[in-house]
Every structure is written in C-alpha cells, then in structure tokens.
Image (tube, rainbow, N blue to C red; front, side):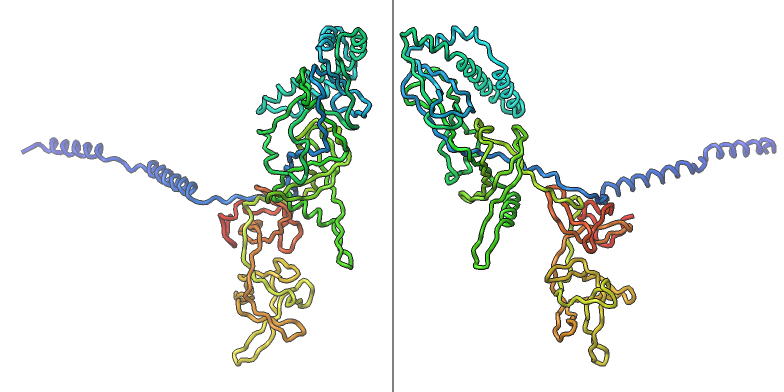
Length: 494
C-alpha cells in the first residue's frame, strides 16, 4: 500500500500538468479578427458599389475656342519678265506703287549685279529699314511653331530678300552712274498697274469665291515661291504681282455649330415687306487676327460648295496689312451666353405628361395652378374637381407635369393616363396621355434626389450653360448629382 503522502503528491503533479496544457481564451485576438473582417467588407463594398459625387452649381459661361484658318482671296495680277537677265527689285514688298513707279530692273550682262555686290559692304541701312526688318522678325516669332521647322528656312529666305531689297533701293544712284559708263544692257520696268506689290506666287492668284474647294485648306500641299530668291530670270517668268483692289475676302470651312450661329445672325438682318419682298442687310461679325491681334468687323455670309459650308468674310480695308499672307488664323469674337454652368454628365431626361396649355387654370391665386379633372362618383354622377399640379415647364402649346406626382393626403396620383380634363368655360375635353421628355438634373439639397428641369442655352463637349430662374429649375449654389446615371429619382444619398 502506498503512503498517503505519495498519493497526494501525485494528484498535485497531475493537476499542475493539466493546468499548464490548457490555453486561456484570447478576447483581443477575437476583437481584431472582427475588425479585419469589417475592413475587408468595407473595401469590397467601396470597389463594387457606384460612387455618388456632388457638384455645386455656379454662374459662368463657356470659354469656347472659335479659332479658324481662312484663305485670303484678292484681286491679284501676276507680271512677267519681258527679257532674260539679272533682276534687281526696288519697290518694297507691301508698298503701294503706281504705273510710274520703278519696280525692278533687268541687267542682261550682269555688270549691274556686280556693282551691287562690290558696294554692298559700304551701304548703311537707315532706322526705317531696321524697323521693317524687326517687324518681320517679330511677326515670325509670334507665329513660329516647333512642329514646323520648315518655316525657319522660309523665314531666312524672306529676310535675306528683304535686306537685299533695302540695299538695292539705296543704290539706285550708283546704278545710274554705272549706266552712264556704258557697257551694260540695263532696263528699268515700271509697275503694270497701280496697287500693292508682292514678290511671291502660290497658285491662288486667280482663285475666286465660285471656285472654292475643301482641298484648298490642306496646307501640307501648299507651295509658295519667293520670286526674290532668284537672281537670273528667263523671259516670261513671273517677277512680281500687284494687288489692285482694296476689297478682299477670307474664306474658311464651317463646323455645324458655327454654321448655325452665322445663319442665325444673318437671318436677324433680314426683313420682309408687306408685298412679300425680302431684303437682306449686311451682317457684321467681330474677328481678331492671331498674327497681330488686330480686331476688325467684316461682313459675313455662308456659301456652300460640294456639300461643304464655308464662311465668307468680306473686307473693304486692311488688305495691305495681310497682303503677304495666304493663310490667316483668326478668332470669331462672340458674345458668350452666361447662365448656370453644369457638367454634361449631370444631365438626364425624364418623361412628363404634355398637356394642352389651354386647359391650364388657377384656383384662388395665380400661384395655385392646375386642371379641372372630370370625376365619376359611385352612383355614376360626373363632377369637376380642381387638381393642383406642379408645372415643371410651359411653352406656347403645352404644360409639362410629373406623371408620378401624388396627392399628399390620399397618396394617389394626381393625374393618370386616360383622365379627362375640362376646359374652363367650355364643353371641350382633353384626355391625359401624351408624353414628352424634358432635360434636367438631380438636385440633392435635401439629402435625396429631386428632378429639376433645365433649359440649355449653350454647350460644349464637357459643360452646358442653363437658364437661371426657370420654373422648378436650378439656382446658384444648388447641389446636384455629378453623374446622373448613378442614381434614381427620390433616392436617399446621405
């Protein structure tokens, strides 16, 4: 028999072993487990649910870019050399010449050209000459593009020719002296017509409004020949041209939006007399040239060639300022429509009852608007009941009411398809049923989505300008849903 003390000692050892083998419950681990699961669920919901963003309505307008490139059409006369030889120019490009003005000379022997070269180092340009060169440099820098480096070489040729022209003009007396020495066949030529002299040709000298084509505006195929870059000229070669008329045109292709705008401006200057005769007055628009930021008011008309709409601007002045350019970049300055500026993503549509406006009436006050609806009692008797409705929009023919609008006291729809409306002081009836869609946005000022009707005044690819102060419309600082496709009407969002 074992001793009692030994038995007790064994029990104590077994108890200690069981106590060491049992792990206590860890409530902290459970708590953090719940947090981890909660975070996973939140992340999942965040990435799988649609996010509703708000937008605060602000007043503004659309900064629309109305820049265009037009082709200048002028009355141009190309003049050709009568004999072969070395050509020297004396009239400055862009200068007005008369039939008595010397434009160029032809030296058949080349002696005069040698005199020019020998004396060129002794020539000094005046302040006016340097001003002209600086003007050409500034004009180039204002329109230069890193994407078209070929312009640099054309500019270099033009400047070299300009400097040579200025020097030639200052050396006429020396040429006259050289002629007195004999030994050279040297001939001066006067301008063939009065006008502005230019020393380039590009194939558009005989272009007219009747021959306008969309291919003209492909500038990659445009070729311009600088006539001053040649020293030796053959008989019959073009040597200069004269622009003989101050009136000129600028033609440019129209996009649909600008075509509509110009046609609307033109129609506003048209009147119809009692005898039916229509008188069209000139329509002027304001434009600004990119080259020198000059603002001008030409007349405008729209013409169509090969199914394409073209704007035609007519000028009666400023021809000499742009005589050296065939393509001119300009901006149409329009009075931008102001209103409430909202993103186009916020715009949606809703269907309304379109009811004949003649059936709209009031009860008690002008603000209490609605319709007289025919009702039928249980015993079959008919009566007229005034139904107050929210008028979302009204034009000359229809008023628009919400098909889902309910009477607060009965929770029944105020109007349903098939209801008969009675015209005041008449026996005529109108059956509710015709529908039409109105544009609007979802207002969220109250924490849930409410449809607000809008009238769009102007728009571009991203924003639209809507009229302020419309019935059941928007006001400045209203909050709307940024993306209308993500919600439904009467949806609680926060």
